[in-house]
Length: 124
Image 1 (spheres, rainbow, N blue to C red):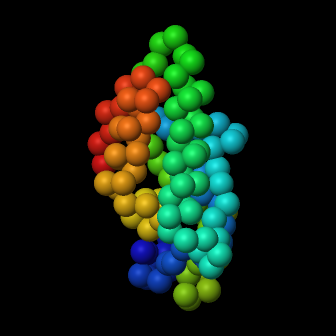
Image 2 (cartoon, helix red, strand yellow):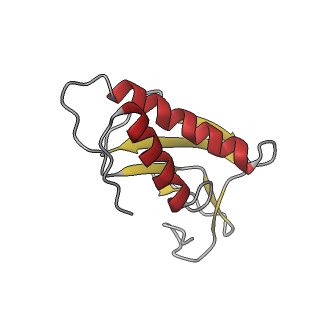
């Protein structure tokens, strides 16, 4: 990935950090989780992602009027540049494709949408 500071292809996801989720540009305070690539398997991280998405869908299903979920973002600011650049804290860089594939994320959301009767119209 390209570093937003030096514009070189030297940006890597940190081995541990926080992932935040947003749905249609909105997120709950609880829509985040910690990851540790050295201690957790890929399946454990995917389970954490699914748990947070399910928590949101369960909460959102209680609304009277539900706009379809058209956009879901999984992002983190826990990246490092191999050139030792300082990455601004408010930087939001996707982890989709790194921690979970787009296809897996889309299937997860479609399945949870059906389970909780939340309309999902994702476009990646």
